[in-house]
Image (cartoon, rainbow, N blue to C red; front, top):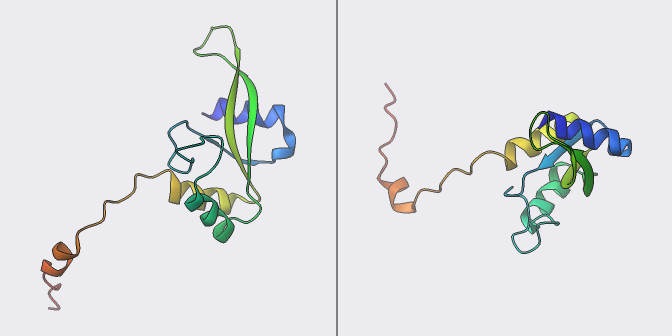
Length: 114
């Protein structure tokens, strides 16, 4: 993944230093249009990482070491700061925690105060 980020930054230096390449199955992508972010991700970015930019970049990548590079399109998020990139990565690249049903939460005993 580091090679891909470096290739993107070399191809388009205007993206800056804080770049994240989204995987094809990233939760932040819109399910109906993978070239866009989901409404939830866009809303999160507006609140937590203003100035983040989504773009599609074309880079030359080899599928494995020693193979002939081929042009490949990747979806990139460019951030204004390292903190914005880290916050997005923390919120959007981890597996979401499953929500517990309300009944299960009500059945949990209170922690022992002793």
